[in-house]
Length: 607
Image (cartoon, rainbow, N blue to C red; front, side, top):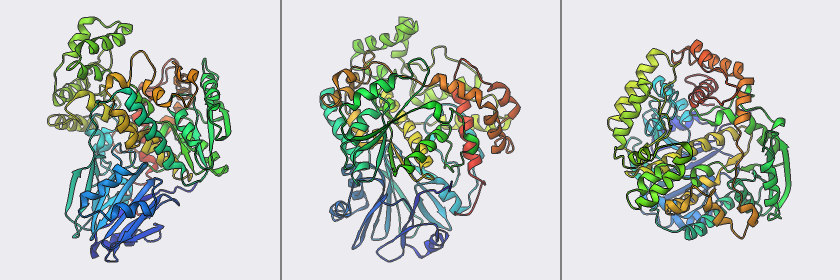
């Protein structure tokens, strides 16, 4: 399979940038210029993934998934007077895309707030260059992977901001809520905020209407072009609404449902078939068993897609690519999935902590509804609800717990700002020392996404899902299929976040927000579904069956050669347990190993 990466690179309006443009000669298939005629935007993208408008001193381009037309961009561009005006694009146009602009030669760039696409910048040949892939900037600059950054990614549940560091020290990621501008001289760079989370203030009823409209627009951003589209139809409350709206597209949709033979494994198929009765636009429904696909953790030896960071998407890569390759055979170039739905539509215990400040009785009832089944004592619940530790204080405690091997018996606690981090025992002594030093240094001044715990957890969780979606999107690039997750589009997320948390989800009902949004569109009995089928048995079996392959990948990746892990310790302590899925710290090691192995070389020329 040809390992094609799609990307864009934005250059300042400066003669010095011509040397960077020359490095992209023969690689980019799109070249746009500043008003001066110098190169501005060089990209390698699939047909239809870039829309642009150029007139007078203004240049505006969207790279990604959008139904916007050049006329839409012209309408916005005519009102742009200062760089901040480019932010109007992200507020007005549905989809998932990066915004790139040139105003009298000054470069503007921003990505989605949920980070399903990213903006990075680095100095290459003396000029500041902006791109949507960190590895592309690293290759242009000849940068080497930073061992400390890579070591940090071996830590399980790495908290903000440590989880937002590029794998190359010279490459800087831009937070999704921010935009950057690069001055004409190619040196000056400014960063400012364009996105803020909405207040959680409206009712479920109001929010359901907004959510339905936002989901419909997000799906239309993928289907409006009229090209063939496939969509997962799991029978759950994430992919099924997406499939419903995709079926309204110009050419309908090809729906895909997977089942397995584990207990309950055919339940999703039953619900998918029930929901299909409301989707006459589904022109074909492909039903297949997971037995026909690569096992969990299977196929990783041959999965050679280059990624620009370690990602949980790696372990699902062979399955995803197998499905997308079949899409290609059927003429499909866009595949919609329901990733992000759990992060968007399910509540977390941290909500109770914030709710305690305004509605203590309701917070107590919700917290106890979740704690009683776990056997947690009332006094323990109360203590946690009343915890007032700052993010910095929590981070410091979390690092201390990880260093000293302290395990919380009840896992994620109500007063936690994030899941407990865990340092793998197979980290080498030098790598462990570097990781601990870095974590302690960051924890001393760490700031949360939001001063309110619940709001912080919302954004942290959604951006974690965004990183997964970005990784799965990179898996689709070599196949030639856009693998899209509309539920994490900014406008969809905003619709959900605007709802009061106590109405957005309930301990007693499964995803009530989406049920309310789809009432009258999907069958009533379908919307009363209360269960969800998991894949834990398949994961445990797959890990046991392919453990030797995983050890081989880790050995061949170079993680041990550069002194980051002890392979004997990994092979011993990560052995499969037939009754349990592998721990998150095992996953992080696999993710880092696949990233490093697939990078090919630690530095390299642009290809």
